[in-house]
Amino acid sequence: MLAFVKGCLAETGTDYVVLDNQGIGYLIYTPASVLENLPPMGQTVKMYTYMYVREDQLTLYGFLTRDDLQIFKLLIGVSGIGPKGALGILSRISPNEFRFAVMSGDSKTIAKAPGIGPKTAQKLIIELKDKLKLEDIFEENPEEASGISHTGSNAEKETIMALVALGYSETEAFKAVQKVDGAPDMDSETLLKLALKQMLTF
Image (tube, rainbow, N blue to C red; front, side, top):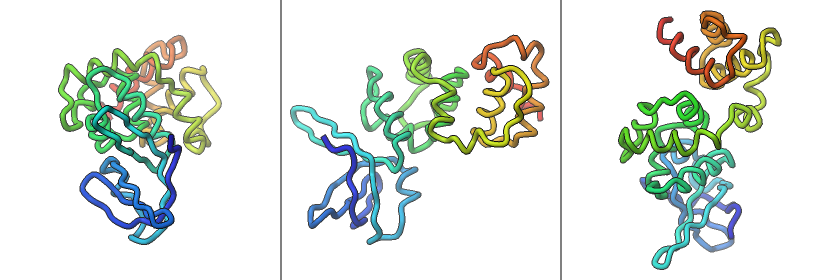
C-alpha cells in the first residue's frame, strides 16, 4: 500500500499527473482542484495516495493534502459512488465546503458536481452526516479558528468558526449567528443551518 508518492512532476493530463520517482513514472488520477494547484513542471510534488484494486483494475488516486484523501475515502465508501464520482465532487467542492454541505443538508451544492444528481446528493448526506464533525475542520485547519471571539456558547463559537472557514468574514459570521433566535440553546449543527440561511439576507 502506497501512503504517498514524492517525485518530480513529469506530465499532466485532464485528470491525472505523472510523478517521476527515481526513474519510475507513477500515473496518479487526481481532481481538477489539485491540477490547478500544482507547481511548475519538473518541481517536486508529494501526493497522498489511495490504491484502488479490482480484479481488472489497479489505479492510483492522489491528493495534495491528507484532508482531500480522507474525504475521498469517505465518498467511495458510499454505495454507488466510485472513484470517478468522488474525484468529480472534489473537483468542484473543497473538503470544508463538502463537510458544511453535508452537515447543513445542502444537497444543491453537492449536486453541482458532475454525475451527481439530487438523489445521490441526498444519499451522501444521509450516509455521511454522522461521520463528519465541525471539529474535523479545525483539526485540519487550526489557523481558521484563530481570532474568533471567546464569548457565547460553544455552539455559537463553533458556528462562527465554521462560517469563517467557509469564507465569510468574522463580522458577517457573528452577525448571522446573532440574528438566529434562541442561538445559545441550539446545538452547532442546527445553528449552522439557520446561520447559513441568514447569510442569504445580507
